[in-house]
Image 1 (cartoon, rainbow over the protein chains, first blue to last red):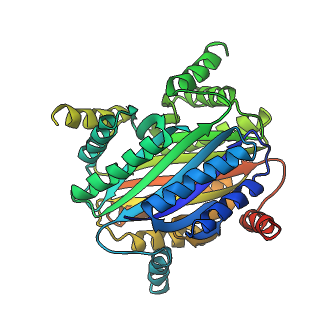
Image 2 (image 1 turned 45 degrees about the vertical axis):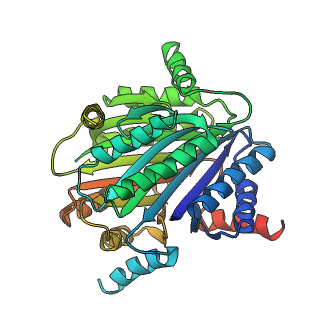
Length: 101
Length: 101
Length: 101
Length: 101
């Protein structure tokens, strides 16, 4: 089962600058062989369910190891059985509708 | 690693009534031995990371098997290494602050 | 237009204990005359759209005034035009399915 | 008060293809003069709080008018009082950390 997931990991209690933690998670995700796209409010990830969630767990371990004793995380995700769909398919589909609007 | 998680699974393309799918997920979660609290916008779950996410995956499989070809899911979750904390601890802590406010 | 909303406000950079900020938001919401239900991962709110979002904005102002210079917030919400529905209706509907399952 | 917001509007009960609804919301947002960036799991928006939330409300009205009687929406958002920050600043900050990692 494939999943398209938006991951947003927020370390709590380590100050207001969080980019080094986000960067560390990016490395975990790409090291896991996952396709990722960073955006202003999270990281989009595409891959097989177990591979994705193993990497998400690893992100939490790494952020804790970096010194954050508390983490708050939000994930939005989609699965579908009717057809395969990539992250690019999703944005292209909307852009096509906008172009013909 | 323990996690406190708010799970909201939204089957897409099966009409506007979703309660039977939410109920099916409740059964998956309790069958997995997880502590759950249903609320108006999701289900709160408390448990060990892998046990929780194995059950979340199973929820997706079950909802797909029930006929939903597309699922959109939102999860909010917290992990911490400084101390153990239950769902009850979290609400009690806020209520104590309100009581003394 | 009515809305049922799950609000989770996370002050960043003020340490790992967040309950006093959540309690302050509870007061803002109830002072605004909104029905709220606190749960382990947020606060459920029911009310008219503008009244709800005016209160959510006020929560941000109050949390900033309390000293949090950065806030991360997650909201899940539902609107419907086919019928009126309360927070109680939503949980009752799932529980009825579980009872007859 | 400025806000950076990730908006994901999911019409329920209108089938599995949702791109025309997302496209309609894109038009609402850009017609409101807001800066938006579409991504695979939502739309990032940057702007003044009231202007942003007035447009978000209008998106809900438009999607209901298009025939969706139920809508489920997720928003992640950030506000800060310590400094002004754009969506570009946020991704650049992470990419700088990755480049020097």
